[in-house]
Image (tube, rainbow, N blue to C red; front, side, top):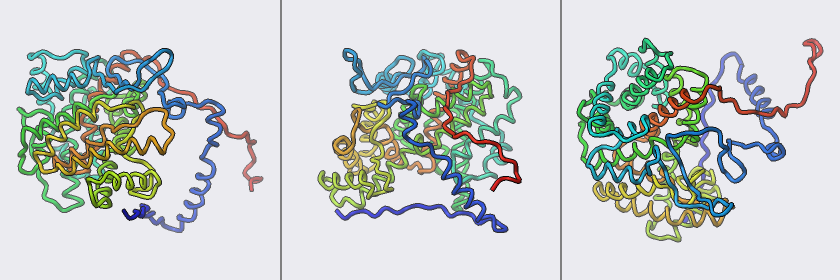
Length: 466
């Protein structure tokens, strides 16, 4: 296999008027020189960078009853890598999924109820909850037109953040942080975020790609997943399997403990006493980052590049050669990463990836993607062996949920611009639960310590400065 030349992506720098480019270039050089901290100081002061210790274990910063992520077990006095577990309010994610699938009903709504209220709903409670969410999906026509369609963005996450902050202006009790009011606001946002995403995407297509603007109203009888497909597709058509698989991805992304970056952002921002809309907008900003919510886009791009460079998709050796090039920074984006492999907590396995893989296989068979699915499974099998051999690992390496989620979205004909927004549509449930928890149990603003390592200086009068 021929080596892949990495193309460096550079954004054009806007030209500033009146010769300001030179000044900005000078300030940039100063900032680049004076911002970095000596890496050795982090070791000297035992700084928990990223709130994680040297082994990657997270620093205990809070307690939660909402979700738990388990990747190790205790054997004697040591932590040993183990098959991953994800718990929603004490229920294993596999049991939750198997339960609602066996009942032939959507799972996202009952998962939202479970995460918010701590117990699975009975039939009457679930119906009442689903009807409440359905009634909250509609937004004022003027808000849709003026707040979304007339202000298109090239990034849907930014449009959603603006939309969430715009909803603040429609709420007469926006700053009330009582449990009842925050819960009301949370349910409104859980219902409305899918609408914000789809409307923002339609505005994006119209403004930047000259496509016809197709706007569907939400269907009251549909689930969240069904409504998303109905509103996204011009013909509003979807199959039962498509709705099931999309519903599954929403369930799997709804919560991941209080320590993930966006949920921790919810705790940090909520601890200040700010309003719900500001809190959720901040969490959206966190999730937008490619190190958090955008990882599945990288997986899709990497697999696309692999599928072109590897001529025989059944040749393990050729696939391994490509993966070596990735680690050597000679393929795809030259990052040295095999995207979709590894996780800060999971080591032996990510339970979400295991579940999603099985449904991806069914969807692939139904939609003519079986060869692509087989390629994914080969990479999933080979990559951990190569990564472990070339990198010093303190724990095992396995495929994470991002390895399959982008592939699933592609099979569902969901455009890449909506991959991370779909993550947000799901995770807003977890954010809402963590916000309620922080307001009930916080009482103190979250403020970790940063040690100054700046050299001392004396004030020099302006006329004496060089």
